[in-house]
Length: 281
Image (cartoon, rainbow, N blue to C red; front, side):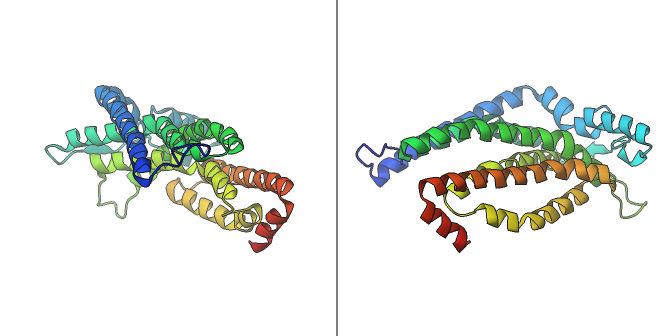
C-alpha cells in the first residue's frame, strides 16, 4: 500500500517498515503536542479543564441569562460549583501528565490522519486519490467541531448533572480530580469521534458496507439512541436535550446524503452492479 500501483509491489516487510515510520512520526507529533500542553499548565487546567464547572464559563453564563428571560431556572447550571479534591500524593502530577498526553493526541489528530492517508494514498487509483485529498481537511474539521461541541455544550451539562446528582441529602459530593478530568476529556474526545460519522459513512459506502436504504431504515433507531443519551447527560428540560441531540441528528442526515451521492455516482458508472448492491441490502 505504500507504493504506487504503477511501481513494483513492495514486500510485506517493506510495508511494515513504511508503516513503522508513519506510526513513529504520529507518536512524535503526539509527544510534541503533549509537551506544549504540559508547559501551559495554568491555562490548561484553570482556564480550560476546570472552567466548565464554574458559573463564569461562557455556556453556563449564557444559559443562566437565558433562563431568566424564559423563566426556566433549571437552565441555570453550575451556579454552585462543587469542590474538586485530590487524595493521592502524586495525583495532581499524574493528572498533569495524562491530560497533556490526551491534549497532545487532540492537537496532533490532523497530522495523524494525514500520516494515515499518506500510507494509503499510493495504493489508490488517480480518481480515488483525487476525491480522498479533502478527507484529511474535512475529518480534521469535523473532529475539531466535535471536540468544541463536546467541550462547550455536553461537558457543562454533564458536569452539572453528575456533579449535583444525589442519592441522599446525607451524601455530599466531593469530586475526585481524576474522576472529574476523566469525564471532561472523555466527553470532549468522544464528541470529536462521533462527529467523524460522515467520514466513516463515506468510506463504508465506498466499500459497499452501508447504503442509503440501510441508513434510512435505521434512522428511527438512531434518533431513539441519540435522544436517550441526551436525556441521560442533560438537565431535565427539553431545551438542553434538543441542544445536544440536534447536531447529532443533523450529522446522521448528512451521512445519508453522502451515502446517496456515492451510490448515485456508482450507479452512473456501473448501473448493474450498483442496483445489485442496493437489492442485496
